[in-house]
Amino acid sequence: MSCRVTLARSVHPVEDWSITGIQREGGVSSIRRAGMAMALLLAVSAPGVHAQAAGGAATEAYFGAVAEYFVLPRSEVAILGEWDVPAEEIPVVLFLARRGGVSPEAVMALRRSGQGWAALAERYRLGPAHFHVSLPESAAAGSLEGVYGKFRSRPVSRWREIELTDGDIVGLVNLRLLSETLRRPPQEILAQGAGGSWVEVYARLIGGAAPVR
Image 1 (cartoon, helix red, strand yellow):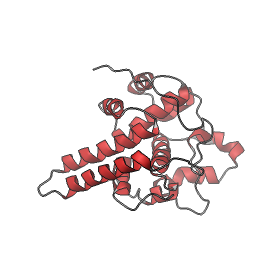
Image 2 (cartoon, helix red, strand yellow; image 1 turned 45 degrees about the horizontal axis):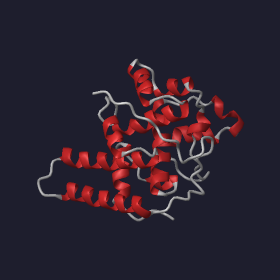
Image 3 (cartoon, helix red, strand yellow; image 1 turned 30 degrees about the vertical axis):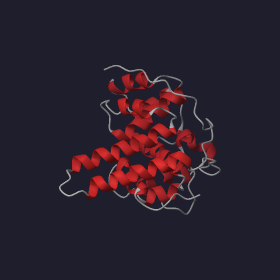
Image 4 (spheres, helix red, strand yellow; image 1 turned 45 degrees about the vertical axis):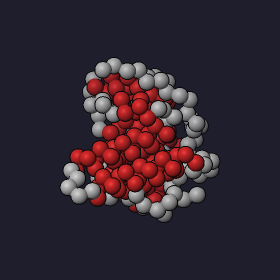
């Protein structure tokens, strides 16, 4: 099945997506997340439920966050989820497409040709600074300790020297996504990232305490 996805203009500035200063209100999005959390908890706790069903509920909830962040209909994100990439890499496709001024299909075509996310970021002239998410100097970076070590060991003027891995890019894009949609500081997101995918991290977060305001 072929479907072309048109990305709406982002509500975030292109050059500085600082976590601080987010002005989003809770509103409908918070209500939807509460419903997703309840559905996820029911899926996990229902007697005799299969792990696959629980995983499906987690992925659906995660795609809801992706749709909110990129200002896309949930149905379009669900279609993207049918592509042959892990769910947690769908935001990377959309991030590169929006920043590169191309369609998600164009990004996926190159990905399928064998190019990694780091190579595609270079192709679209997206350097480490475009992916960086502000984190307090003393905060632990969890699974992203390696890449944050590179950021912290250099002045901003030398960040372009950093060579990001595909895993770094997937992690940083998801960190930004979860932090901004849930309005939680990035260090709190990273604290939930011990093992598992970013889809699982999101599932744990929406089942926990209320977002920081």
